[in-house]
Image (tube, rainbow, N blue to C red; front, side):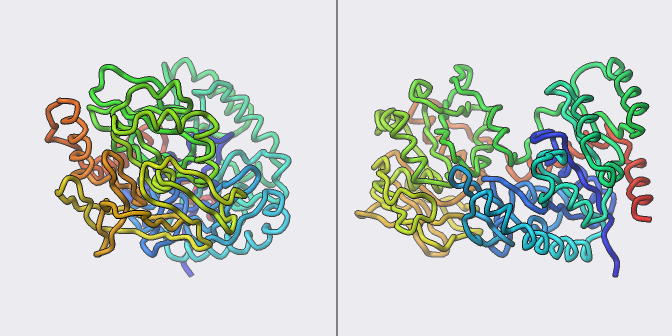
Length: 496
């Protein structure tokens, strides 16, 4: 049976750039004519992606599949871990929730099962594709975890894959982190590392050259490339560390100030990206009442634990601060944010929280009850804004079931089914990616502009075209920095 040739990308730490480089290699191999798939055995993330058949995987693998020009499947990310409470997470296997587990339970009881699931998923994927780009997680040198890890060198063993180690020079200490990581690996795993990539470089490469020469002489490993910092590529982020790039203060140069309420378990924050990319909008995170100011739009994003995050808003004073803006600014809630805008959120079966019931903000006449079955589905329909309707598509992913407490205007119609709620200047919906729909997004923002006395903007950007351009730009950027001929030679030799 023909079997794919793999390449694995591991890093010295989280946020070294593994996901983005994996995306780049997926696009490069696809551009070179190879049927390519991404693979991440086990992903811990609150940003997820819904496959065509309504299954949930890590968002990075969904985006990487798009970069490769193939349909995402759960074999590309067979195990997804979604933190819910401290030390506890929902374990999703092949796109369907298995159960909530504490960290020690997962490590103790799930290891063998997980290895079998991961091995089978990889083997099925390898029989369908020519190249597989495998993404690791964190660092392969986590000494306290490596005896039962399921995402780094154990996966390299399963796939019989060469490993490229990525170091982030922007954070400093890149040679120490690369050398230290390699030295901490056992002998059999050191031999899998075929070279390194230095990522996020700024400045004069000639000044770095002595360090590159030293590294190659000291370790005997080649530096396969130095990738310059790329700060304007617009590809969905997965790691919450990406949120550190969001500002917290208003920008007077922008006409619309958009305040995003940041709670501890915020999920699927990529819903915000298209608004960030609109020229007239400034999107910022708000973590405390003093930061709220006088925005034009307040967004409550998704949450993996709606009850705890609603409680957090009251404990921090953010709830009171938001309520002072009632009828003064536009407010939008997506998924968990939609639930928080309601009157009450209940969790009788403790699906997400030990809290049986938590008060919402009361800005929408709805109430939500958490159910034991998760809804995960791609959806299409029409959103309604001031009697005008706009074609939309997106996805739903939630445990809650929401009902109205009194008659209200619905936000959208999905195959004849009424969805969401609108009450005055407040809207709520379960539809993720709703702002990725260009016509609706611009109409909604123009409505806010008109309320401020600003002239509507007719022109916007095409989200899909912009994403495709970003894939192309990323691939070209990485091609220029890395010797792809050497990469292909390494993969070919390693296969032998």
